[in-house]
Image 1 (tube, rainbow, N blue to C red):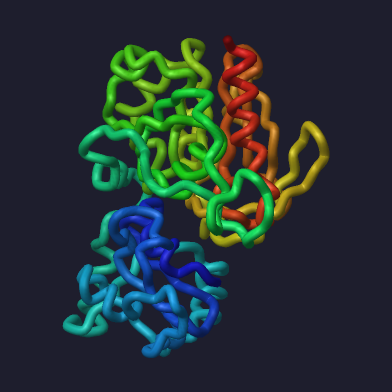
Image 2 (spheres, rainbow, N blue to C red; image 1 turned 90 degrees about the vertical axis):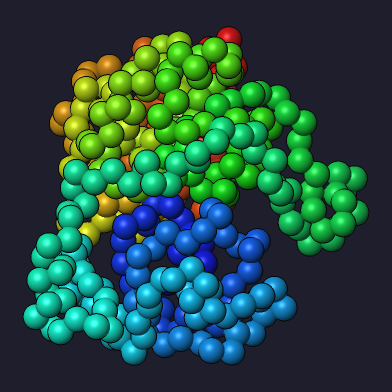
Amino acid sequence: MTGYQEIITDPSYRGQIVTMTYPLQGNYGVNPDDAESASPHVRGFVIGELCEIPSSWRSQQTLAEYFAEHKIIGIEEIDTRALTKHLRDKGAMRAVISTELSEEEAIQAAKDAPSMEGSDFVKEVSTEKNYLWEGESRLWTIPSVTTNQVGNYIELPPVKYRIVAYDFGIKWNILRSLRQSGFEVHVVNSQTPASEVLAMKPDGVFLSNGPGDPAALTYIHEEVKQLIGKVPLFGICLGHQILTHCFGGSTYKLKFGHRGGNHPVKDLRSGKVAITAQNHGFATDDSSLPDDIEVTHVNLNDQTVEGMRSKKDPVFSVQHHPEAAPGPNDDKGFFDEFIALIESAK
């Protein structure tokens, strides 16, 4: 519904056209602080109405100007709620937005477009050079008299653990959340060998979100398998699906995926239900998981797997996004769980 800039710059949307259900988009403009990566990743944007005069002191350009700068096509005056209902009935499908093709040519172009199943967009979005995350990670807050506050920001905690994060299309807010939890984060390319990661002697390894079909990433599966049992692992979204394959399980394409910030997820261990943010088109087949893998969370809308852990190795993962502030803080505890996993493995 909202958060259009975060969606546009989320690498998990690589190769996809995105439809927004809220009718007005662009009303607060675009600014660099709200980006989730260095560039936009959507292939097209479908909206009801474009706001041409944004109203926000933070705005630096209009949404139309941003799209023109990055050569991304958008289309407005679409009944996006009717389109959403159609996708709910028929499932996610290939599509074309064009100002040049005839109706027949556009339909054929959509039919000829590659399927999301079998696609590998991770190679397109992963960082080319490994780096230490040093981006702004302080939490903004309302001014108060607390001693750890500087201006409108809460100072970051000291670094307690040093981790390596595989970049499969990592969101900057995940990196911010990890740093806010006391991690020093070294980000590496998706094709980095496990031996190279282990040589860095990290306290833990994080497996990020990302786009495409997890089953197509066999070269990543092979490297991550070599990390299991040797270092604590935490995966989110695509990272969760990659671990599914590493455990010997399988994934499948959902009819229309899980999108948005209102998905109820139940923790089977405590019975607690959290409101979560989600963005994925594939899911773990729970019947394919071996006996030494415990399903810890399920989606209450359709009972799909939302979290799991190994019973013998320090490994766990979740399908949803704890950094995306859906509740707004229902899911933040997973970063503390990663800390506890690292401490218990020492």
